[in-house]
Amino acid sequence: MYGFLAIDGPGLGAKVAFFRKGEVTTPETIDRTVSDHARRSC
Image (cartoon, rainbow, N blue to C red):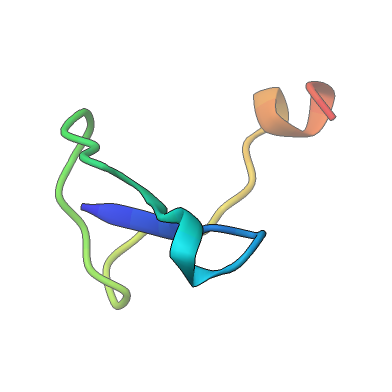
């Protein structure tokens, strides 16, 4: 689950969602290599 606070103040809510696609990772095991595809799409 991840979320973002409302940019107009806490009284306006938050966006919360689940992301369930892809492999499970941790901060220690995630692959942080930027792919060629990602570089070309910028």
